Amino acid sequence: SAVISQKPSRDICQRGTSLTIQCQVDSQVTMMFWYRQQPGQSLTLIATANQGSEATYESGFVIDKFPISRPNLTFSTLTVSNMSPEDSSIYLCSAGLTRNTEAFFGQGTRLTVV
Amino acid sequence: DQQVKQNSPSLSVQEGRISILNCDYTNSMFDYFLWYKKYPAEGPTFLISISSIKDKNEDGRFTVFLNKSAKHLSLHIVPSQPGDSAVYFCAASAVGGTYKYIFGTGTRLKVLA
Image (tube, rainbow over all chains, first blue to last red; front, side):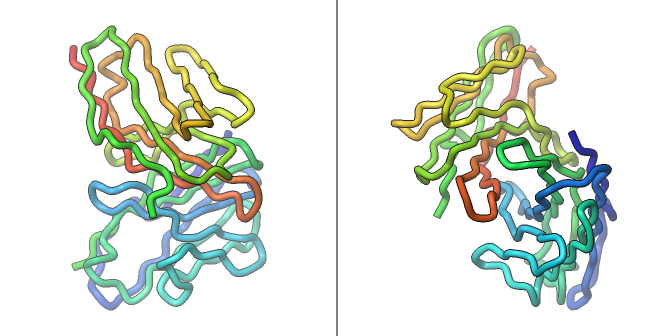
């Protein structure tokens, strides 16, 4: 298994600002993902964080809005840029050890944009 | 385009009885399926998974059934306990590509004491 630490756990931000969320895994993992869960909704995949290269974004998500870094096999960051109230959501980091195994989740970052 | 769907947003079950949560998918390339439980203010916790080469997987009180022809899977919890009250998500991943996990819409289970 893998233990995932996510920081911050929550934040209240002013519109127009940016927030960087950090995700630290206690072991090297093959895959890291970033999800968003809007109130009452499912988990929506934002992007796959690729180690040493640009992230792979899902439809509807772009790098300028959600830049992602993954400098090594245990760490990734997600930045929510130029925030608006519509970005208020829970952002979740996830990691998988190998293909066809379960993905583990951090506790999430609850973001409120005012 | 919701590739993984859970058509029941909520379910109430008496303690000790069976809880059955259902999930349907549309992408025939999905070959690995998972169930997660989520409490408020926590990240999802992995429960059980099944590969497409199987039709059943069991772990304690939790059993997952997969019907590939119907593109349907279900999670059975027996016996249900009040601590099982949470939101349950099914998820699926496909052969090839970036091997990402796609989540269903979730079912809120309430186990009544």
